[in-house]
Image 1: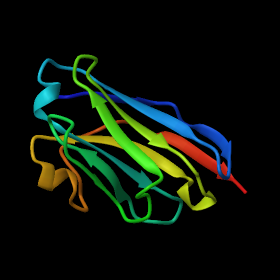
Image 2: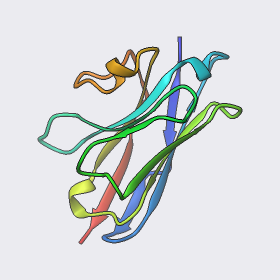
Image 3: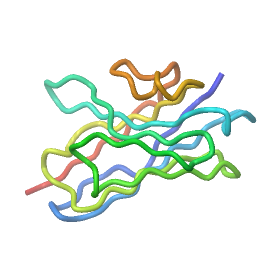
Image 4: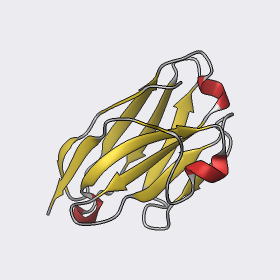
Length: 124
């Protein structure tokens, strides 16, 4: 079992930056691929980014490439999402996700474990 708790959301103007954090419980954090998803009002949840178990491999949705960076600190059981050059269309609830399979985390449904979400609002 993995429990995930996100933090770092808030309100920011377009062009600004935010860093989301996701703290995971358990002693096997390093075995999990970690990801971020988001869901905007009236839209389906979508994959944003994922980070492999060693942190060396990362994957991004085309909409955030070059603006968002995912990273992890296995010693702290934490994964981060640095979001730069934010746009109003980035407004959504952001969810942390974890699974033993990278393919599953990057799929539309995501992995088995989810955080409660943190709201990000980008004003124009």
